[in-house]
Image (cartoon, rainbow, N blue to C red; front, side):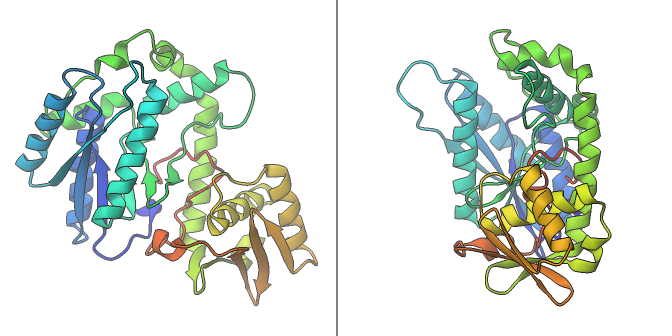
Length: 324
């Protein structure tokens, strides 16, 4: 968790809890981490209404959270009236609802329980669709409208999280959709062993995240900056990746710039050029720091990154690790 930060003093974290072993283990482990820092958590469960048992399951989770003294809120999804809702649409709706809840309760961080098995399945699904971006899998850190979505369990397999939940005396709910062969994700779980490439990429993303947490900071006036001396010490590929990550965050763009553009920009700034533009962000040297200012300063940037100068909100777009 610490490498996702730094977090604000006495942090308030929102935790998505569906009732599965992974999310229950996440809630329990996060509660311990927060207790040591004087922080608190609010657990969130979305009653999506897609299965008859959904409401009862949400109530069960609420009772479980109360049992452990954790704040909890059930969010009801007023879903579209048409009969079929895809898994992707349901997932996006859950994220949007929880993102809005974070704005309401004042939490800058939303934790979800995706684990190594989920990551391997994601990588396998993307490989089935052919070559292209994103083969490293789900990002460990992703910016939503009002908060950062964090995945601290991506390095841990499902079996380990189930063992943790069992050790803590927690029962859990098995979502039957996880075993339904009609869904693509279910059908590719057996291909998880083919995801070594994603794991290797994850080690790189982890290193980037740790570097950014140490060398980036928020500046006055909706700006971010990097320690220029430390940046010049990076190899060319790493320098381009962290440049792209920081520019994407400062410019508040949904996706990081291409590797080609980021590399070219890094080469300019490492040479004689004192200024450059990348991802709607003006980048320039100020003494020994690289400063990133949005071309049109976005509202809420400082709030979104308050207390977390840069735990890699867009590190190479597809982060995978316990940077989380």
